[in-house]
Image 1 (spheres, rainbow, N blue to C red):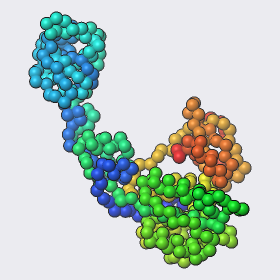
Image 2: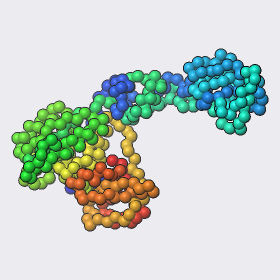
Image 3: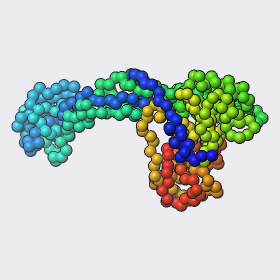
Image 4: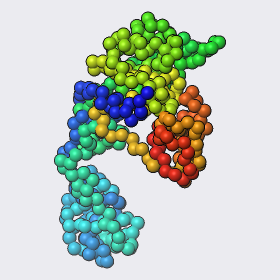
Length: 391
């Protein structure tokens, strides 16, 4: 059994990179950007009004002003503001030359003869300066960034309609166990529904990869070998849940070896998730995940997702937050690093949820994240700072 830190190092160092492709904006969300994007223009491209009102010279605020024109959004001003004049202007419209202040419509009084007077108190100039959001040639998105919906708006703003992204990893999923039936079936006797595969497929999609489910392998070498061979041929990464412990029917490691895969480790000092197996082949990786669903979930988020991110060049990772513990916490055994599901209180404290162990998957539905309990630590006092990872 190796430490979590050593297992994590092996996983990250064993990753391999995928190719890249060009996609349009509609297909870009959730993808890992391979080539940085620069702006083709200043944003705003000119000084623009942040309010509906009147554009004038700041030194003329105390005088009655003649209105020269109305400048609508999408139209450029036709006249320059000179002493004693102003232009009515709409939000987002270009500020006319000569003006350095826009006073709001509600702080104005219309007078006879096409004149207007400022009735408020001078404050912010209400002008968004040219280039204050984005400068021409500025890098707006860096390589390794996962493109989010708000990034799509930035790409459109700078005129980038196609981006170079990493190819998406192909990830196969197999569950093992004679006791398993699919979710649409009613378990009989000692059977249970297969929840891991549905969970893993959802996690794969959230990680920006392409998942494919291969079904349930029975507890015999022929069934496991047949599905593993097919899944390895068609995917970059294979996830197998169950069958990786040391019982009489835990056959997955034996099949891995028979298929020419190199097993790097098969036990990790972590809880939940101790019976984690990791092996590699030529441009292939296989994770043998534990059968209990909480273990499977967390091992994917910590180990598998890290591997997928390395494959696609992702350089950004969710931060681990330091938060005070909401209540005292203790555990009987402390020889493994442990993750405890938690919520966040209104006071900003991490509070463990009711949790019965690695089979208690429903504990995660109400959890915001997991608290990391270091190896060797059996007691944490209320108010002490703990590391919290969002899930």
